[in-house]
Image 1 (cartoon, rainbow, N blue to C red):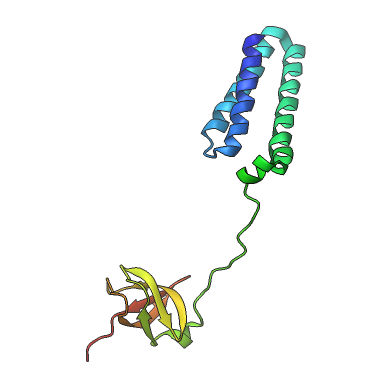
Image 2 (image 1 turned 180 degrees about the vertical axis):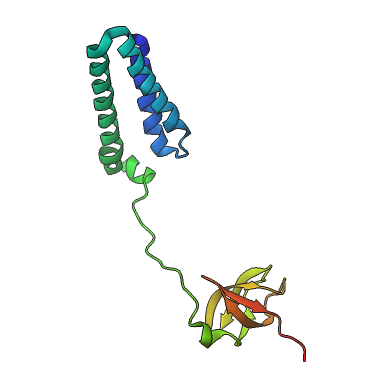
Length: 157
């Protein structure tokens, strides 16, 4: 009986810690501990004892998760541990391809090969297809992919 209780408690503690230290390892070990406790309860106490132990384990787990996700975040310590804001920003896709390809760009940062450029007074993330470009370099927009411009050093003619 003590082994079963130990496995249930260890499993619940590990499952609760999984929410604080994500990575799935603690959750998997906690789940295995809970399952092992239930399996031992079935083998030692039969169907009735095993079902009772399983229901008890699920009830304790539900209580632990309720405390962790409902009550603890409302405490002063919980407000410091849990993230309560969300990112509402959106990616700035470059303006229409036909409007920007062929225009001159200025490197705002060093492009090695990625960095930022100014095109028409707007800052864009860019990839320099011709390699490294120093800050302040004059470049030409040659294309774009999903979220950045493709720039090249101007050809000498």
